[in-house]
Image (cartoon, rainbow, N blue to C red; front, side, top):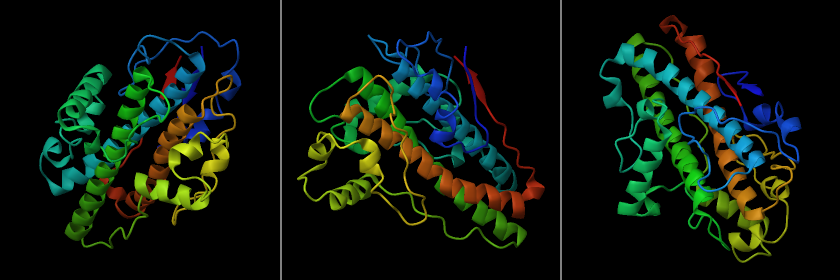
Length: 288
């Protein structure tokens, strides 16, 4: 059994990946899927690929740690500002889901509610979800997992904005210096535009993805102000190769890692300036 732990409140994908990559072998090891807030069991309906599942477990722990850290940031701030937490937290668009629901560890409910929102309003309600997910094929079991991940990552940005607003209110109340401007997480359209500018020989993103250029080389061309260069492990999924699947996994990974930059600034600020509010950030582990 493998135990995987976050080493700080905002672990990057690589920091978690590096601690388990030696276990991504062929033939794959046997694993048991642990309970995680936004990852169903079984992970994929109708089939199993252990190395892909371990990749999802890494991201699932990263999500769980992010959600725990976001809640640990919000609660002390709300205690000063006042109001009910459930009223202050934003909702995932066209649902009643909030951070409280994500942390309730009922992933089937999360999947069902998001699927119902898409069925009623269309995928366009979630701007961080690529449309279509894959250009040359459709695998609903994989698409369902990726859609939920990208919806949740988009939601984190909404929560981050609420935290920033709460900090402004608290510093006003306590007459302290404010947080300042945070780096803006790039939109999906900004990432697409940057990739097409970096690879002008391709007519569209689908052609670039299917060109055979490694995803590590593709994403290494991206550089956004306020964020470090993007580094994707090579190989991302040992003993498995699909440029389209790997591209979508990499996209999910970089959005999680983008989030660590403004959140790290926030954590440093609250610990230095608002430490009297008693912020505490528990670290999480899973075994599989």
